[in-house]
Image (cartoon, rainbow, N blue to C red; front, side):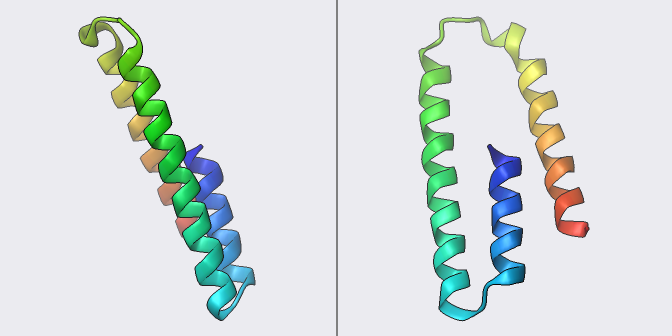
Length: 74
């Protein structure tokens, strides 16, 4: 979800100009925020102990950060 949002934001920033770029970036940010909120809400509904899923969550967040950095640098 985050990787696709970053790719779409980069595509909009490179290929669109002016107001069209701002609208596209705002739309991508809004859709990403809604999807992240919905995902967080669904994750909170799952009844699993935090200790078991925390390392996987940290690893996933670090992977997203690395992927985002690599996308922005290319």
